[in-house]
Length: 73
Length: 404
Image (cartoon, rainbow over all chains, first blue to last red; front, top):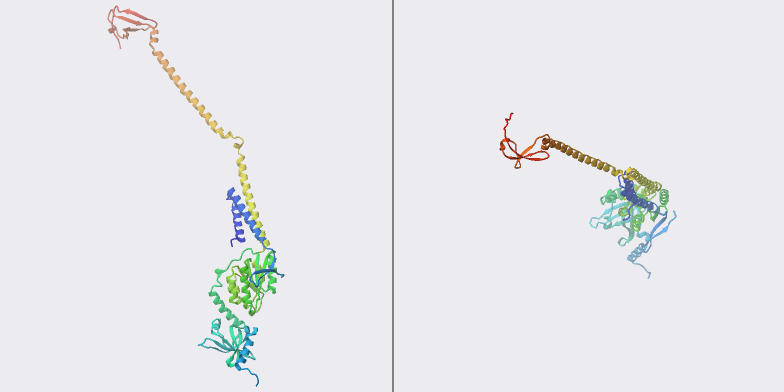
């Protein structure tokens, strides 16, 4: 998986926050860190909204294709 | 003449009937082993399977005997799988056995223990092979029966914690002869599909015999080979199923598996908002700090009275100039004093001053005459007064005695 994982992004976000909170960054680095943090938090936000609340059943058709149909539980 | 069959034809006919019967070609039989004999030469195993009222001959060929996980013994209750065929030479049918499993809890546990050891050695339960579950799982794959209560429980709890969670079910028998193959295929199918973050494989509780599908090498292998983390969720009273040991995480029940699979979304969302807020506050604090620094710098006098930058230099310059002028003046004054002094001395020593008082200078042919002895009577001398030179002639001369 190339895609960054949610927990990776969440951890990096925590790093950014701690760096900013430490007060050791100069102005340019602060802005840069903040921007990176915003990007990360938007990514996390998006991940949290990824799912669509569907319940489906996966079946393999006779031809070997994968098919999804809705399932009422 | 009446129509007849040969004995061989009869047996062949009966055999065809057996061969064409689906049930008799692959069935499970339960019974007690008796007259068990393993022929050393051929390696085939022969025994009779019986219950209270009946008996049937069984044979297990060498190639199948090798796959036995235990040693069948007389008196043992077993489940066996096989097909029926006629043994023509003796005119009787017998069971051609494919596999034998001990029946009853004791027997099953014994078998399980063996299988467990075997799979352990092959690394299927190795802790270092366990995959970590993602902190956020949006899509949950489930392999279980679509008719079971376990599925409903899992979906309910998944949705409680994660309102928008997606559930992808692969329906599978969870007990019976087909269950192992279907469960394993379900895991493989979800891996092929690839779009789920976690797989839950499980069923509700049941007797040990009902859970046997989760104790098969087929299912264990499928769990082990899954690229996607697997949670096992077999409700049961005994200590473990082999699926539990192979799974990346074991849940005691399907409900618990659902709880472990997805995070409490509201807590996670809150956590994210907290971090965003903290970051914003931290940046604002930093900016305020720099603002203050800037204010402090900009409030300094030099920005609106830049001449103060020059004032010190100006003062220095002024002081130096004054010092320089004073120095020159002092030098000048000193020179003047010395000159005046010298002039005064000069004045005092000046012969003119002496001559003012009545002294004269006597010269002869331009040379000053200082002694009478230098002159002769009749010499022409010049007597210099302050205001005139007199030409005189020496008429007499009288030398004076000098004292002192």
